[in-house]
Structures are given as structure tokens and as C-alpha cells.
Image (tube, one colour):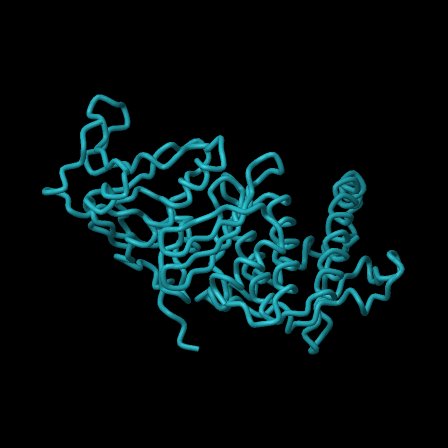
Length: 221
Length: 140
């Protein structure tokens, strides 16, 4: 049994599949609506190693590699025993497909796509670290970035995105002696905020897309 | 712990363990470079560097290079720069620490103070050595 996202030939599209069947009908949308056009997730301009980045981005949407069919009955039994994990992985991949699909459909600011690509690259890079980026941090970052960028009509400069060393994410914009950053912790019970500073005068605001957009307009744009 | 002698060590070096610690597009150090990892209460630095790709003075498995900071300018921010205590088990002559950034801030004021200090450290830090050529400005 195989599932995940597959490249659909020369078009460069990535589409989810499960044993060869489309997923779209399961949430009442068409499979076409869940496909991810290649141009919405371009290679990150921060990554100076384009080939591994492309591979990582591709791997991100192939949560589970298809396994070859086997004639060995013991291997098939093993596959049945692992069905629980397969189902869990499928649900995880499916939820991500729906989430990313619906997320990208709402996207209006073209500055957002490379930021999301870099965010996912970071998650991949940190996956094997002692403190990998947590799902909470990724989810929060996506929500805040989406809300903020879509609240801004202008092009938004590419931020620097870095792990905080404890499973959270720091997203930073700088211009001369002006800085804005979203500090996103690894867990919901930790402090999250939008920080900005102009020369030596700083302030913390509650983390939200609206606050981030307001500070970016005021300090960076 | 004894103060690091800035006449002997006018510069200290922060090993770069994450690519995101340097903003390639803006060619600037990011504040993430001065964030505590889980359980840390100080920012580790070294007093001298003699790096090659085979040998890392930061003793890190993954190191992208070093940032350089002026020892006295770090102190001017109200932070301390101290050598390792010779009596401690993990003593290393070349190691020092930046201390004074609030750890696990309880209040918004403390959190803001911590972010201010990280901002100022990032502003005075410069890229010293780009070991893997990852931080060159993109040409396109």
C-alpha cells in the first residue's frame, strides 16, 4: 500500500494519491483543488544549495515513499501489522494536504510563497536535531504569516527564519537599525510575541497576523 | 568565573551552528544566534579561532563558521564576558561565556530586555569566517 504526494509527470505538479486514487473527494473538494502548483513553492533564495533544497521540498510532499509490491508472504504480513502506522501516516499526510491546499488557495500576497518554502526547508533541516521544530510552531508560523502577508498590499521583504534552539521559530526582518520579528515558541503555554525596535526604542505586542502586519508596515516597509 | 581579559582577547567568537543565524540577503547576523538553547543560561563563545573544515574550535559537529564580537562592546551593553572556571569539570581554556541576557523571562519587561540585548549583540556581531560558503550574497 502506498500513499503520499506524487509528481504528475512533466507538468511539475505535486498531487496527493492513495493507492492510485485521488483524495479530493474525501473532503468534498476535487483532487485538482488539492494539487500544489510548482510555482507556489519555489526554491528558497536563502538556500545556497539548490539541488538538495529541491530534493528536500520534493521529499516534504512525499511523506511516505511508495513501497514495491512483493511476492514474499512474510513481508505482506509485516505490512498488515504496520497498518496502524500506515493509517496514522496517511491521516497526517492527508491533513497536511488539506491544510496546505486550503492555505495556499487563500494566498494573495506573492511574497508569501518563498517564506513558506524556507519555513518548510527549516523544518526539514531541524527534523533530526535534539529539539526539532514542533508542529505547534509550524502551524502558528503559517497562520501568522498568512494573516500578516495577506493584510499587506505591498511586497514584503524576505525575512530570516531560524530555529530558536528549543523547537520554536524566530522570523526576523531588519532594515538599517530597525527590526521586526515574530517569536514563536515550541509550545502554546510559552510566551509568543511580535517584537520591534527602531534604533533603541522597542516594544512587544501580542503575536497575531494583524500586529505583525502593522509593525512591518510601520517599521520595515 | 573570572572576567575575560579584553586586553588579551579583544575579540570573542561565536560559532555558527545554524544557517539561519545569518541573514544571507541582508548580510547581517540574526538575533537567533544569541538565543538560548533549551537548558542554557549563557551564550558560549571562544577566545581564539583557528578553524579549518576538518577542525572546529567551537567543538560543534555542525559549524558554518564564526561571528566576531568586540569583547568591550559586549560589556558596554551591560553584559558580562567570563572565562570558564578552572575548577569546573568541563573547563576549556579557550572557552568564555556571555552572561546577563534574562533566562526564561517571567515578565513582559524581562522578555523585552532579553530581545533588546539580542538585537544589540546581533548589531555588533560580524561574520568572521564562512566555512562552507553558505553566506555569500546571492547574485540573482
